[in-house]
Figure 1 (cartoon, rainbow, N blue to C red):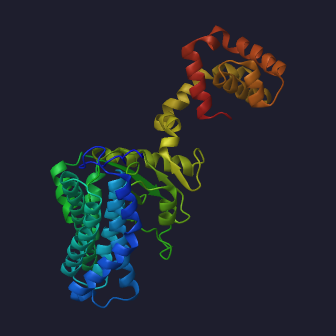
Figure 2 (figure 1 turned 180 degrees about the vertical axis):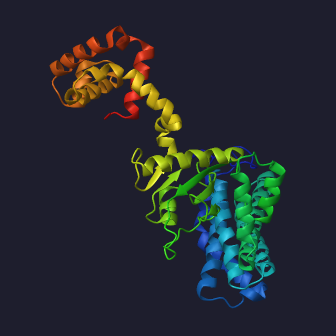
Length: 398
C-alpha cells in the first residue's frame, strides 16, 4: 500500500491519500471548463470574452486550481506563483478598463464552484470530516490570496495610470537608500502608498547607462524599485535570494547589454550598505580591477572588495610587504612575485606550485631559495605570509 502523501500546513499530518491527489490532477481540465462556464453564466462582464481576455480568464482558473492541488500534495513554492499570476491579472484587468468588482466576483463564483466539484471528489473517497474541513480552509485561503494579489496589481496599474505611483516609489527608494536608517513605520507607510510589499531582505543593482539611449532604457523588473536618473542608476530588488529571487536572465532582460553590479543581499534596514558595496564594485569594474562584462555579483568578489575598501592603506601594505623584491632586477621581479603567490596559495607545496605555473619543480625550488634570501625567516611566519598574500592578490602583476 502506498504511503500517504505528506500533508501541507493546516491539514492533519499524514492524512492526504495519494488517490485524492491523483484524481484531482486528472480532473483539472474538466473542473477548469466547468468553472469558466459558471463564471460566464453568473458574472455579466465575463459572459462574452474572447482573445486576450479569454486567455487571461483561462490562465487564472488553471493556475489557481493547479496551485490548490499542488499544495494538497505537499507544501512548496506555489504561493509565490499564485500571487504573481493574480497580481498580473489584476494589472491587466485595470489596463483593459474592466472593474475590479467584476473580477473579484468572478473569483468568488469560480472559487465556490471549484470547491463544490473538488469537494465532491473528496467526499466520494470517504474522507473524514476533519480532513474535508481542512481542505475547505485551504481552498478558501487560496481564493483569498488570489483576490488580495489581484487587488494589489489592479491598484498599482490605476496608480501608474494616474502618474502617482512612480513618484511615491522614488520617495520610498530614496528613504531606504539614504544615509540615515529609515524608520520602519515610515517605510511601511510609504510602501503602502507605493503598492510595494515590504520584504525582509533586498539587494541593490547599479548599472551604467547612456542618457541619450532612450530607446533602449532599462526596464524595471516587477516588484523592484528603480531610480534611473540617479548616479549611478539603481534598482532595489526584494528578496533576491528567497521566494522572489531574480536570476541573471531576469536582470539581463531588464538591463540589456549594460554592465551591472548586484550588491550583496542584506536586511531591508541595511539597503544603503548594499548600494555602497555595489557602487564600489562598479568603480573597480570600470577601472579593470573586476570583471566588467554582464552582471557582476558582489557576493562572488568579497575579498577584492574588502582589499580595495581602503586603497591608500592597501598600497602602503603592499609597498611594505613587498619591499625586499625591490632589490631584484625588474626583469626577474615578476617571476618571483608570481612564484611567491602560487606557493603561498598552494600551501607551500612545491609540486602544486609547479603545476599552477606550468614549470618544473626544480625551477620553483630555485626561485624559492632566492625568495628566502630576500625575505629571510619572515617568509615562514603567519603574519608575513598573510601580508604577502594580501599584497600580491591586490596586484599580482606589480
